[in-house]
Every structure is written in structure tokens, then in C-alpha cells.
Image (cartoon, rainbow, N blue to C red; front, side, top):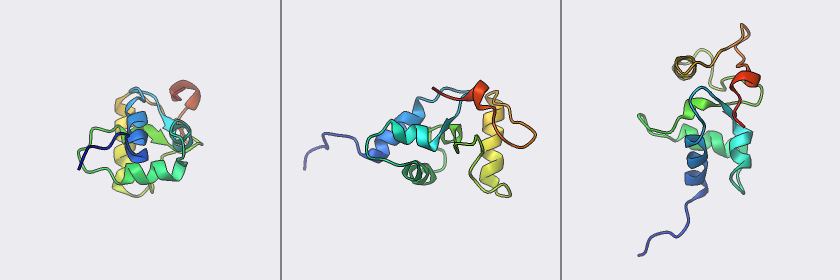
Length: 105
């Protein structure tokens, strides 16, 4: 069998996430808007399916309000926040990211 001629929606979503620069964040909706035929939920599923150690900067994708979507009591939430803070992303006391300062696009 031959190679696929076109990347899948999953691959295209991950390619967009890879373009988010360090120190900036994008919403699930912003990512999906750049890939025809996808939804914010599909972005979430794609990022959740990444294997441990993936080079995709999944931590740079947050919800439209500027919050981390993972459960606050879970290890994923703490890891995402740690990675974002290491890149210089600041959080308000409420846990919301300052999208004016750190929003992509």
C-alpha cells in the first residue's frame, strides 16, 4: 500500500499546537479554527491521546477563559501550570492566565 497523500485532522491539529510559541497560550477553539472540519473538543481529545514524553507542547492549550482545563486536584493540572510558569506565563490569583499578556494570535 502507498503512503497517505494528506495528513489527518489529528496530525494537522498537533502541527498547529507545535506552532504556539513558548510563553504563549491558545484556546482549544483557536487551535480548531485553524484546522478545517475540527472542533475544540477534538483538540482536547487529540492532546489527551498524546503519549508520555511527546514533543507536542500540549501545555500551551487552555480553555477560552484562560484556565487550565484539567482537574485542579490532578497531577496533570499541576504539571501544566509548572510548564507554563517555567516559560514565563503568569497566572492571576484566581488561577486565570492573563490572555492579554500571554495569548497567542
